[in-house]
Length: 375
Image 1 (tube, rainbow, N blue to C red):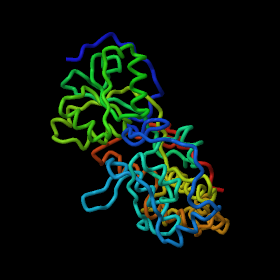
Image 2 (cartoon, rainbow, N blue to C red):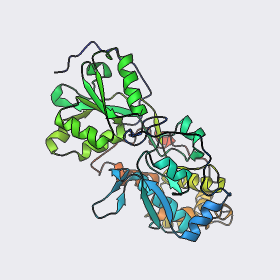
Image 3 (tube, rainbow, N blue to C red):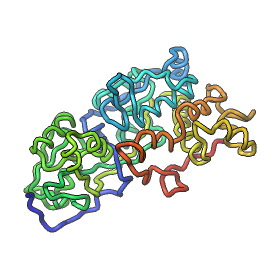
């Protein structure tokens, strides 16, 4: 049994949705893999508008994503890709090329992803990547609107006396495992120092989170830490069932992790296209527009001038001025869906993850998504 000291609970960050990203802070990535950030100008397409032209000429969008995080970016046994981030790749392809299947998914490790974006190997990066000051200012890249609000969490085993109300102070004397050389590691070290348990507690690091999980299951770790979405994903897919059911995720959240697409900063037109693909999924949910009812909605709501413009049914539509077809964002919703559809398909109540929306809700439902008007 891990010795428990009186809780010296430090509120380390605001509590985000009941789930999170497994991407550390300014220099971490999915499940805490290290990445070196250097100030560099992008070396991909540099002329404004050239990214769109390149994609249209190529006939396929190249999207950098994960292949090991179920629910967000995962390569299935048949080689297909699934997940929340993957669906945003498809939505962009539908908007740009009229075909949500016209995507080449480029699996990238955490260490590879920023270089792949900078050099033009990929057109857009959608790989549970946290928006931070360093990444926004030193990589020659910008972030699209946040699509998932997350935070770093901690998990342990109920059989060792932990539950969802456990705090960092309850880890006194524990071995906590995570990825090496990341801000995930830095965050947990800071947390145990603030809780006054650093002298008795060990942070053990591994090169990747598969190794972390193997050590955790073998009993070499009393607790693990990564972003909460990663913890939820790992818990939901852990085997055997007895081990999976024994994992408990603490309620405490150690960091803010806003996640979203990332693109090079040298092409404003392309950035606008990606941004408005994201905004369109939010606006569609606001209006109750789905992939199934969008045609009926447009036919039966001629007075919704915003919808008529955004989905290309009005003469004053704005998409052709962006270099797209008038029905670009119609295609994104028709072929992929609104934010609610994307979320529920990959993370919602009918999935093994069943992640509550929390902050990942529209502003009208108490969440953080507040899209600008399409006019």
